[in-house]
Image (cartoon, rainbow, N blue to C red; front, top):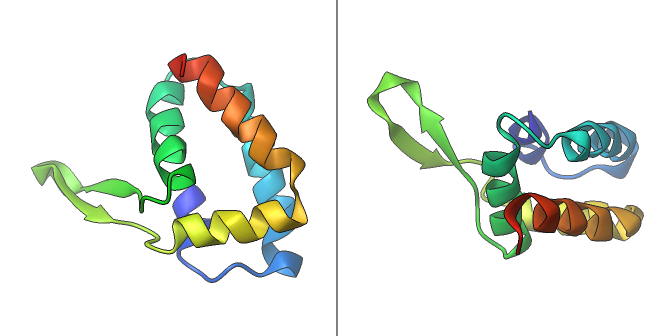
Length: 95
C-alpha cells in the first residue's frame, strides 16, 4: 500500500493524514510481514528506492524511486513520525 503513496509526488493536503493512518496501522504490527516491511522502510530511510516483486517470476523492479524524498517531505509535515517509524524498525529488526 505504501507504493500507492510513493508513485505520486507528495501532496500534503492529499497524503498527510492518510499516510499517517497507514503508518499507525503499520507500526502496530509485530508479526507476519512486519520484518520485511521494516527492512523496506529502513532502506527508504537510508535513501534507497524500494523493490517490489513482480508476478510469479520473482522479478523485481524499483517502486517509487522518489520514495526517500517523498518520505522526507512527509516528515517535514509530521516530524514525530520519523522517530516513531525508526523506533518500530529498531524494535522489529533489533538494529
